[in-house]
Length: 160
View: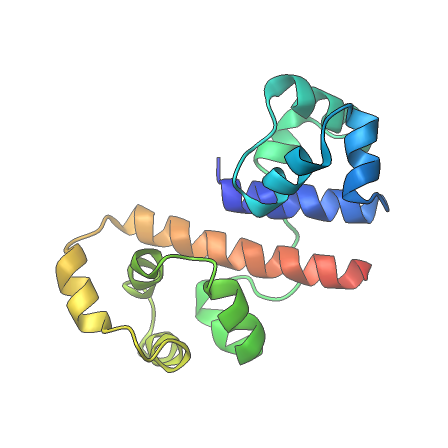
């Protein structure tokens, strides 16, 4: 369960169904602040609210917690260079530097150069030494999360 992806997906669902945060909150009998917290990733809905959301949108709770995100922009971390730099920087700024450095550990030199260009203040070599060894599944998990967030953002842009 990835709160960053869940938060973006909940926001996408709300917009897709043309609800404001206030309107959704009223339909679910909760506060607008609760909706805002979900969409910023600082909280996730409890089970009772997840059930209400799933009924409202006609999806399962599992669809919310593990969304199947269609590919709209990129399919792989190695395609980051296809995303406009300003958009990519904005997305990647949501991540802590440790996560970005870990994601870069399994990337090509081209992608590493791109990340170094976007975040020139980060000493990637020093950070890699500080972090040490990382399991490949952790590298892939962070890379896939970044790809999913990019695709969710592309879906969100289509709705506007």
